[in-house]
Length: 353
Image 1 (cartoon, rainbow, N blue to C red):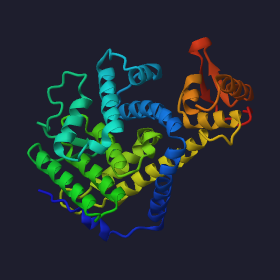
Image 2 (cartoon, rainbow, N blue to C red):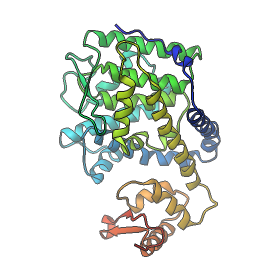
Image 3 (cartoon, helix red, strand yellow):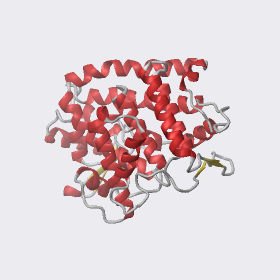
Image 4 (tube, one colour):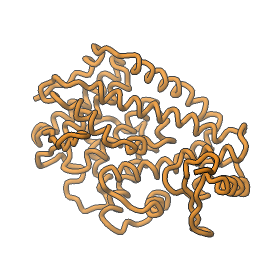
């Protein structure tokens, strides 16, 4: 059975790109306390958008979908789920909410990970919710441009032992400050996926655990910018680097650096967007400029109320005026009337084709 020693990651050589990513992430993390103190109430309102985007994106990555409007009802209004997909979406919503509110009090131990899995399936009748897998699982790596290949995960007998080992090793290196948290977090997530401790829901669990570990180590940008939505922008790349980092895992000859670099790029992008999002609640921009920046942070169709949540300092009349100007210029496409009005970006800055 494979053994885990996260301290060995310190023996790796880091290139210039990796060092720049570390620098960018820590630079934003160092400023986030100032951001939160200056505009704490305004920024807290922005978590509503991130919750919706994270819940939608993480489930969609596994083919679990609902309409944009229904996702908002399930996440923002705690609507009662109507079918299997909505049950799974509601479970993710609940698990993410607990992480948002209680990450400091959640230890990284198997019992809490199994509890999180039970919450993830709490709206279903799945008898395996919160239990270690009973069957052998495989990961379809499906690398871009190549035939499908399957990675054999830990066996049902190995899984509980390995889950205990990676939790113990992660806590050890974090407590003794032996490994940079960003490295320990990413290696833990990769090992969790290789173990695949549950019959179902491992990928969604990995994204929940990624948020949990980042928050516990002070990297809070993901509360305001959806990590899951960033991953969903290029799922093939995530699958490719995961497969590359899994090769040789059972024998201990694997190379986690591609997976580490991928996640550092994701987090760096989140940090960049967080700083841009912070500028939305500052007072130095005109109403039009503020709404334009807000629209750039939204994906798909959005409403006037979505913009209002992102721009709490603006009056509703200022937002309506800005949306009207953006529609007239061709920056936005408007659909529907009255309360059913939605907008989406045309990606035209000046209204020309």
